[in-house]
Image (cartoon, rainbow, N blue to C red; front, top):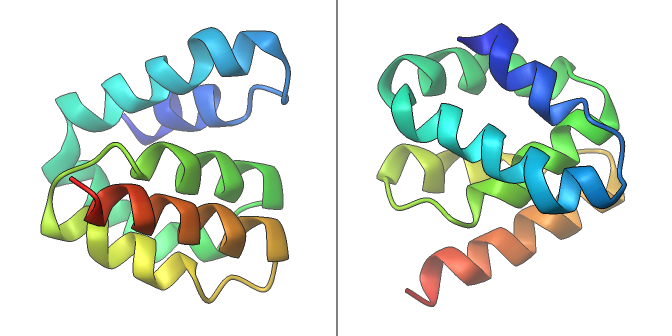
Length: 96
């Protein structure tokens, strides 16, 4: 499961990521959230910047407390773009 999620998160920033990749990654999260989030909580910080940024982006569409915890952790990323995306996702998450 984590490998499938990573495959979609690693799609380069382009129209395909915007149109399809983010939705495919979100679907993987939605279908396997309980198991995936346990892994994500320990793995995300060691990931490359783009993968972290894509993860932060799709988390804004979530609705679970675990996703909210992960978003808050991602605010501490040393990558400014990741922290920015996490901040946007937190705002989206809280506006629901």
